[in-house]
Amino acid sequence: MEQITTKVLLAEDEPALGMIVSESLDSRGFDVDHFENGKLALEAFEKNDYDILVLDVMMPEMDGFTVAKNVRQLNDEVPIIFLTAKSQTDDVLEGFHVGGNDYLKKPFSMEELIVRIKNLLTRQNIQKTASHYKIGNYDFNFPKQELKIDDEIIKLTHRESHLLYHLVLKMNKVLDRTYILKKLWGDDDFFSGRSMDVFITKLRKKLAKDENIEIVNVRGFGYKLIVGE
View: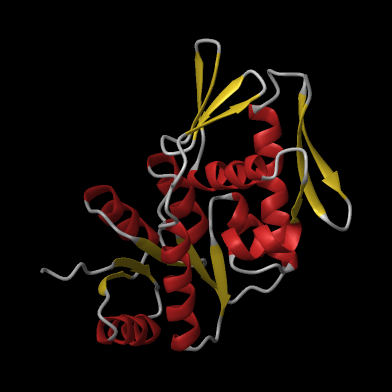
């Protein structure tokens, strides 16, 4: 049986670091395409299929955040890890807002990068064991990542769909904040928590057509999807 190779797009403008990361990932069986600026990286993404993106934030031609914004217009699902020398909270939050899944501060160990890559790929491949769920007047199609109400179909991103799936499983009960952060984000730190809050807000807007549905914040515990009659 032919072995399936994970294809990685690496965008890193520092040649030495880019070479180290590329060779390290190659030695672990990954197939890596390395580009030294964001513009070339985006052009490559538009022409090829990648399983995961590793983007440096500060790059010539086009920074990592801009690359991610453009990628998310084409693909909601491919995992994105940011490499950043920045440590300010706003910079990290910006990464999540533009569609990043994780970040790694320089300097970092290759072992940590590889673990984070594998964790993201594992979470992306969570088996979609259910099909349709009824949420008030909405029909939630988990495999297709869609909400339907009347004749309107509302598309969900990969992350939105999985978050809603777990809320539905605990409908009218509290979904533990720490559990879901570790399940979908891999960490329950401050930055992951802020990222999840953003996705909760997005889900509230997409469920707003049924006034009997609300997602409430149970302070100190988590979130509850409440569906009234």
